[in-house]
Amino acid sequence: MWSSICKFFSEPPKWEEYKNFYQLTIFRYLVMWFSVVPLIAGLLSGLPDPLPINLGGATYYLNLELPFNWKILWLSSFFFLISFGLYLFKCPPFIKKYNQFSDYLAYCHDKRWMAWLIKELSESKVDLEKFLERMLEKGYATKVSGAALAPDKNPKVLVGQTVVYLEFKSESYTAGFPVLGSAEIANEAERGVFWEIFGRYSSSNKAYRVSIRILLLISALLFLFVLGQNICTGIFYIVSSLKSFLA
Image (tube, rainbow, N blue to C red):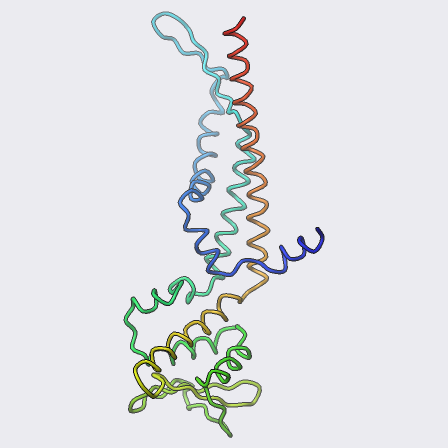
């Protein structure tokens, strides 16, 4: 059990998994609840409970008490909102924009664009070492001797290719796009490099991904408590009604 708990916190979901989660419409109601409930509570605080209502000369009483603790549900939405804010703040823009390779293709980028994406990756705080290792293994990058960086550190647009220059631990590397060869080779390289970039962004900012998971867990536990209150209250009313009917 302890190993499962450690795994729960040591292996948080990747950024793309959080993206899919936050796109679920049902969870947007928690955000609405966070905004609306304090306003409703303020309006109802000055009314008598139960609230007398006169209809046709008869007085009826409306119970304003909710069948659950709205404060706990508000706290649940509060923790959910914080987690969503962390996601918006720390999820890499690359993941938000391209959740899969088909999303990237939908933008109809020139194959040279991959060089600029690699430059952005090198400037972000991600695992550049692992990225370069994979690029060298797959033959998409080359280690060069001496300083290979362009004066402005931007990719160079050449005939047939755009070449990006990288430096890591005093070593220099280059990669050109599109990869020279047949159209099939260029397409396969584009796909392969995309997923290497995606993978580095996907597993970045682990501490924030763990924090989001903890906040969502707290939110879920509070929500389940309120759900249990609703279920118990519903069962109580049904049982009471049945007793009155059978009496």
